[in-house]
Image (cartoon, rainbow, N blue to C red):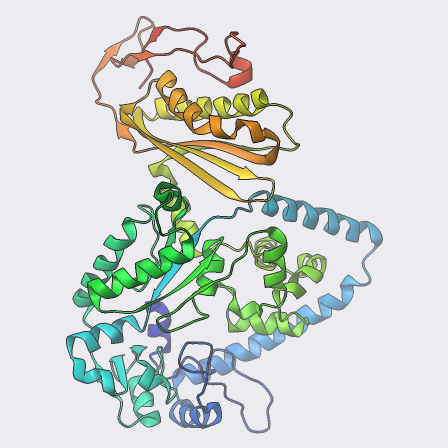
Amino acid sequence: MRRSLVRLAAAVSLGTRIKKKGSSAEMSKIQLDTSKAGLSGVNKKHVNAIIEECSKNSAFYKNEKRMEAERKRRNTELLEKAKQYRLLPLAEKKTIIEEVDQVEEELEAGRHFGNYVHVDMDMFYAAVEMKKNPSLASVPLGVGSAAMLSTTNYAARRHGVRSGMPGFVGRRLCPALVVVPPDFPAYRAEAAAVRRLAAAYDPHFTSVGLDELTMEVSAHLQGAGSRSPLTAADIAAEFRARVFAETQLTASAGIAPTATLAKIASNYNKPNGQHDLQLHTREEVIAFMKDLPVRKVPGIGPVQERVLASLGIRTCGAILRQKYKLRFLFPYKTFRFYLSAGLGLATSSADRLRMDRSQKTIGHEVTFRRKLKSEKELQQIVINCLAQTHDKLLKRRESAQLISLHMKRRSFENHQYNVTLEAPTNDFSLLWQGTLKLLQPHLEKFDDFRLAGVRLGKLKTLPRRQRLSKNGSLASEFDIQIELPSFGKDKKKIKREDASLLFLEKKRICFSV
């Protein structure tokens, strides 16, 4: 955000659409974006006229004119290329179709249904300032400077004054506007209080700024059992109430099966509200995305919105209808992002942060290409996943105390079951006992699953006491006792090639550093 504010500090509002006399060209970076909460009732024509008067001679405005000319040229080339798609030989079209179908299959393989709550603190910086000085609550308020506003309250937004706008432009729109300098230590302190509350629901919550965070609350729901809250929406309501009690600040929330969808949902009922998309199946997600404007997808900005609109694509449903043409027109990475957006599978900053943090745990999972035929087959897959994970544990010279079993049903419902051991261990037999305890209640429904995985957490690095092994290589003095498990009445030991285990019998070993 800070980068965009600096770029706009030349004196232009992020968001005023300006039409030059005699020209139909619109500068997409200079347009009033009324999608932000509190701006829907603004007189855009009035706001645009004032900002044009303030900014038409600015360096930013002149640069935007040059950039708009370049965007127009590239878009003309894109439209010409789009005409060529209809003339492609059948063999080339077939290649495109096969590639797109394969990418879609890969994306679908990663589809999961979690319980995500995205929390957005309402006008955060301004709210903190109003908390510090209650007299500011009744006046139009902006946080920032004459050069740039980083946040405004709802009283200011009713006049069209918003974040990313120079303060002097804001005062032209609203002469009563009060501008206060930012107090980042105060904002960080309030954000820390909110994050402490979030950690109780999801220790691995993600936050890409002081005013937003995303929680995945499945484990908390499972741990609650028969106790309330019973749903992710209940947790969102409880969390927002606790935030207000702790900080006297309000928050809005979105509830959905993915982090991106939850972020989209958080914009539905602002301020101080929440919205649950209530999407539980792939079909429901696709139906929701069908009419969703592409601009609502995080990562699609005004420039991309205009490019897609020139191709007749204004909704995510239209992306899917033209997916083959999009692959022909755009580089692979861009196309893949658009396709993921159309499928409701686009990733957010929260997703990427969660993946970056994955090294706090280690794991392995397998997607099944067909329905499983027996309990034993499911058990074999899970022990194989544990063995692969155990390999990583040994290589990292770590022990683990938390075992997580990840199961995905054929309906794409995502479930995670956790158990915490009494103490950290790298003993395979103890890890298997914990995993089996999690798995057993679900074995009867073996044919209802499409994915299984094991993840180990609460990792602890082992001390580096070392000695030379018989072959002269360095080895740890830690001893690992392994008792290979058996499958029910079948007392045969698991073969290495079947389960990828490190050990074929109970023995005392040392592992390499």
